[in-house]
Length: 119
Image (cartoon, rainbow, N blue to C red; front, top):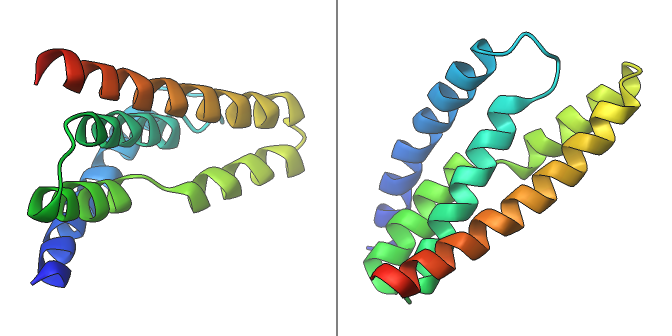
């Protein structure tokens, strides 16, 4: 049963990731990967909310592992950072790495705080 719940969450998270990434990136003419940054920050916030709400079982598997696992993407973050550096945009590569880490951690913290304060 758990695997089915994870698959359902991932089946929702993957297309949401693609659509959000494309929608955000289309609004920027920069080579900076704004779409990937956005989905990773959103996923970190959602996972923080789940952690702050102490969710377990089906909700944790569906939303945490399935949805957030498919929504967020460490591999694309890594690839895009390396690509920026290889294309001579070293400052943007460093900015991407620092911004992704800082924004992701901040979003997770805010999600935990939000869940504890509101839920």
